[in-house]
Length: 107
Image 1 (cartoon, rainbow, N blue to C red):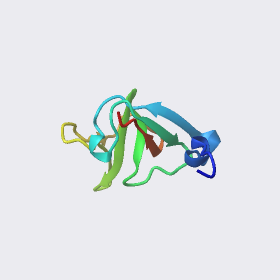
Image 2 (image 1 turned 45 degrees about the horizontal axis):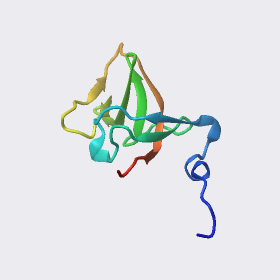
Image 3 (image 1 turned 60 degrees about the horizontal axis):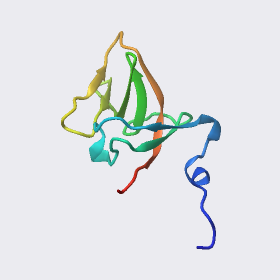
């Protein structure tokens, strides 16, 4: 090894807009995101179609993939045991950030 790597330098592109969260649940297991994983979230990135995001939907935090169908916004899980969330008129939905990295143990 020539150089010691600093994980912060590798995964944090926008320090003022980046935060970490620990995953609770398995709704994104098929995207390689497991219960207990640590996510790197960047609030400065645009939450576009296909990105995995942290959102607050009617007071509940969720980790889902953004999909748009027929002009409607959906938050999709990556586990068939869970249902997509259609964002309907009157619902409160705030995207907190886009997932940029997943950190998990292999033990």
